Image 1 (cartoon, rainbow, N blue to C red):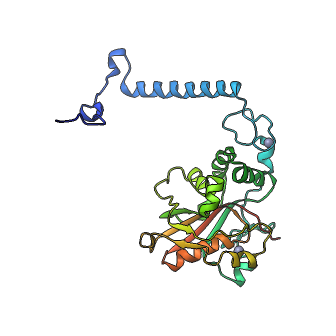
Image 2: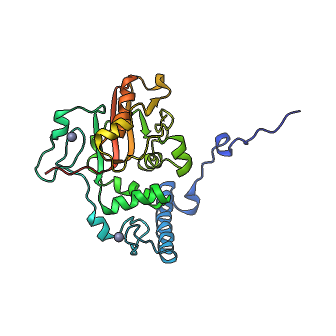
Image 3: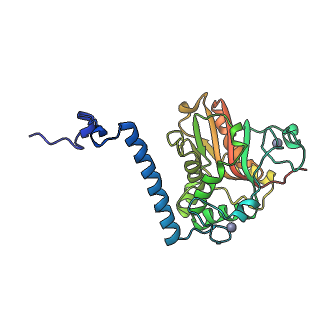
Length: 282
Ligand SMILES: [Zn+2]
Ligand SMILES: [Zn+2]
């Protein structure tokens, strides 16, 4: 007995249909142009309808933004503190004055396990609220905002094109409690065209470390000793890795991840976080 093949082969794959619109008095090129215009106008109309039915509001102040494509109101957007020159060429920390990028005091004194870190924002009220809402209330609207805002960041161009994008993993217990890993969600949103490169199973958090909030750098480093382990080592030897996390506070977490990745032979390990919570240097 033979079963019909499923799924059936696409009609277009077997016999591509070439339409000719000359019969209605327009060339194929003109037809494509007309359809593009119709599609654009239709999309505008749909968006205008959505604006009327569901007025978009700013996720921070809840004021109406006036447009579906505006992810923060104009006032809140103007308050964002994007990291831009001058900043530390290694760890990406923002300087409040000066014209040129250079190494900060910490990077001159000691070295990190990662090669470079960049963050989009200084950790301030609006960004902190969006991150807090995402992590602790499962408020996913912040993700679209971060996706949109990351395109305005001037520092991400410094990063090497990675072979793999690795979100900082959560311990399985924390993952079950929260139901998602915010670093993975951020990676998928900020690099929507790179889904093949995003690997959530290369690094494992094998120890359920206590919360890092309120701890200094030394205690955080102690907490994170042996916290991470690399899986699938053979896949990443000689590769360039980009680690993703939400907040860079002392850098202890991403540094611990970078350490195990470098130990197994990754070529370059760089870090991208949404924001920087340590002090801006003057
Ligand atoms: Zn607002
Ligand atoms: Zn630095």
